[in-house]
Length: 255
Image (cartoon, rainbow, N blue to C red; front, side):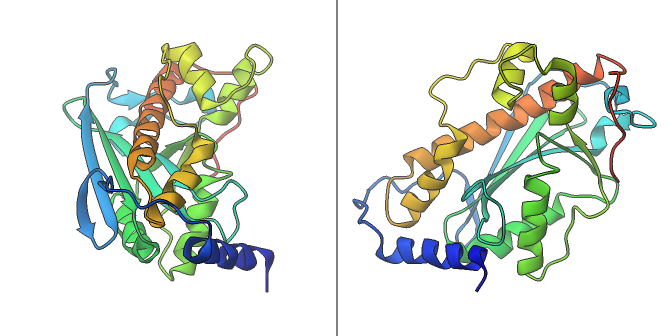
């Protein structure tokens, strides 16, 4: 038995037999129920003003990308180690509408059995010419989702898509100037965003697992708020980077 499978079985055992969680009357997870155990949130935000084309010289792309093709995405997961024992319990995505508003969409599973429905729904948001935008998504989010699609025996909708991972150009430009290059630092330095009462991403797994065992939905709602701000910041950092032009040493995208 592989270590990843063993960890997954141990996590399931903890959910069933772990330390008791006080049953809570606050079980309201935001959004509408698309199918059993799958919640959907959609928010339209007036957030900056994108041009029709996004200049991508900062990432050494051969040509600008039409704003309509961009899909910013971010996952909230059961751990940071990756592997088959880690799953995404929330997928957030943001795209620009024709009227200039940013559309935020989030899928949250409230049961283990809802994962396949979440993956199928997310796949419907992706077009053949979609360009993904993420922050460390090439190394973490995309491989994790690829594994989950494979385990669910579903086609991987991310395969072959262009992918702008903003972490790498941010590091090339500001490494050594900032204390770190995390998204929270980039959004503060570049966009002036300072989060208040934000649930740290490291606490997201505990929030979901506690909810599955009958606990309060309060922290799970805070995870959704955290994820929504991540999506807005992704869009904002991309617009900031696109205005910088060519960044020496930037490398082209892997398609």
